[in-house]
Image (cartoon, rainbow, N blue to C red; front, side):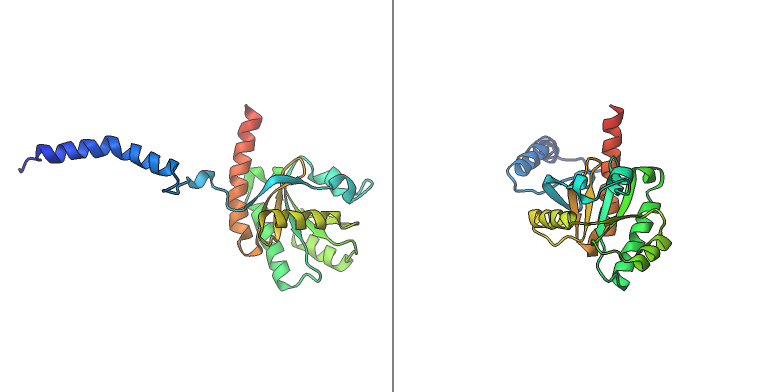
Length: 199
């Protein structure tokens, strides 16, 4: 068996100790871009988080923000009018997202945001797709204006928004990527928030 030369052994030991230091320096200097998948959000971060005007979006006992949404993670999807085939497909995908959340399902709400004018036929159809949808009517257009501001903050056209339990828009997603990216971000956020509650 051929023995390893002392020079190769020395170079191996040198690389073992100096390699990690060199990599750390390159990362610090910005020459190497690396971030673990577990800490990387998939959606567009709204910085700073944008408070929704939920106390003014509706009034009375029928206010869904007070009765159903506050203190939950909310996936907020503005419904296009009319809600065509693509809209129904996305809504159905949100139903599957909620169902797939397993034990965390009670902590999540899927809210469908409508304009001020009511479409009873559409509301019935949406409830047929998934009775757990929370239908929110934007009576004075304040919520739509806030979401437009969130899109402007991230600099990307956004079609769905993630709202924290305090009513702040914290992430946004384009429609083409929303389901997979939402699922990934929600999984991490729910995990971290559960750890915070336990500490």
